[in-house]
Image (tube, rainbow, N blue to C red; front, side):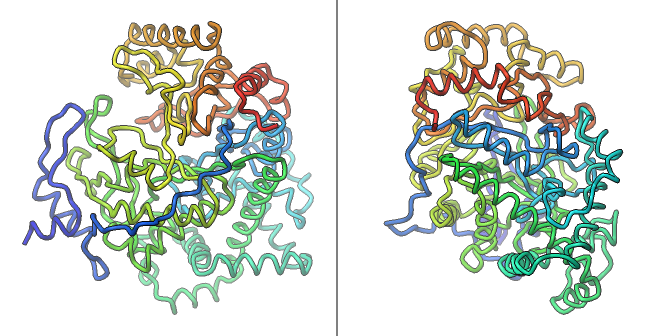
Amino acid sequence: MRDLEVEACGIERGYHDIFGHWHDISPETQSRLIEALSGPDASPIMIDTPVPDGHMRAWQGDGRRIWGLAVQLYALRSARNWGHGDFTDLSALVGVSARAGAGAIGLNPLHALFPERAEEASPYRPNSRLFLNPLYIDVEAIPECPDVSEWADDITPLRQSEMVAYRAVGQLKLEVLWQTWDNFKRKATAERRADFEEYRHEAGDALRRFAAFEVLRLTHAPLPWPEWPMPWRTPSTAALAEFREANQDACEFQEFMQWTADRQLGACQAEARRLGMSIGLYTDLAVGINPHGADAWSDQDAVVRGVSVGAPPDEFNRAGQNWGLAPFNPRTISKDDFAPLRRLMRSTMRHAGAVRLDHVLGLKRLFLIPDGCGAAEGAYVRYPFEAVLRVVAEESCRARCIVIGEDLGTVPEGFRETLAHWGLWSYRVMMFEREQDGRFRPPEHYPAEALATFNTHDLATFRAWMQSSDLAFKRSLGIDPGESDDGRAHSRNMLRELLAERADGNDDFAAVAYVMGQTPSRLVMVSLEDILGLTEQINIPGTVDEHPNWQCKISVPLEDLERSTGFKGVAAAFKATGRATT
């Protein structure tokens, strides 16, 4: 009986760690996972469900080889924002990038977080993946915004600070947005009222539930929703309707913020298209959600409770990793033709020409850790891989949106080939594209249907890597960087050898861009931090308070970016390889 339950739940009986050691899954872990994955709507996971011939190919774009600028939008510094990058900054960056010949702007996940919580800054642990973070709203761009001069003494220090002060920015923006909402109710034109109602109709029940959750969350703070009083943990439709009626203004305020954010983001993509950018906005989809957030509460049957997504032990994380994320339930995800997944894809692709699926390996299987267990006690759980890919491809074609799978790590045999069969592009990081002797692979090694980049937000910047300052900093925190100084020196020599052959011996980041520009890969992304020669790492995995993850601002103001030597050098490098779109 237990064997049948394990099979129905898609639980793998063990796993090989990175050292090749086999780990049997304990009976306790099996029992905990079976319990978490069971329920009245659960059905056996159909791993090998045949997919009919003549299936769609995900959307492939217009065929051009382009380059794009990767930015952490919150980190943008400008003369007009409130200490946190916003959608007007993004619109300005679209113009700067388009004039330089870029065809895409890559963005950190814009998912809704918790605006009042400074400690919840990671865009990869979202409150909701269906809705947007209101801190990206340019409040002053809203027609009903009041005169903000009375808040000047609050705005100026936030704008001048070296780090994003999330709590202060959130409090200030919410205060002004409330007054803006009051003005909207009294002064908005008929056209704007109609547009608001149209958005609310389009967003439907998902928006109504999100708005109610946000009001409930603030009402019961700091308790997470599993500890709320009944009936609010699992409210009935009738109870929720009564709550909304009693808290109509607060709920509609949440909807007003989402409408505003949606329209401002949509205007940025429209501007990118107007300027001829091939992709325009390239957005990122986090692999899971905060178990105490809106999505986990709103559609509880679709999410696995009592477990967390993570990773088994590896060379740099001997105890394994627990990411604190709740995943889709593989036994209910297929309900109503994968309705929860389709809703997520449509939300993510709504204003994007391309999306990146973080940890795309999770479409095939996820490493799930029962609550209270160590990461090494987790197990892999399988998902209906090809059926999920069918849905992703269908939604990609519907939205005319390219899909890029972040396929780093230990990739199962045949996995990339299956992704390619469904039209998903690969994600190739130059730091990892090495031979066994450490040599960097030449440009022609890279596949065409791929995104190529030098690094990621979890890795050292180019300048820090060249200086080895990232190694010294991690050691100062008591973190094993997994690399010796001699090993890094060898890697630098290998990079310089490639640059000498393919970029006339220059070893600055423009030379790296020139080499990547020679790859067949349809999209090459370069980070703003590397273009400007910054050393501060965006995020250091395994740290919490030891490093200001997701808080560092870009040192160069947006208004000066176009004139910076680094930006002009990289743009010229890509133009020389034929990637400029203008």
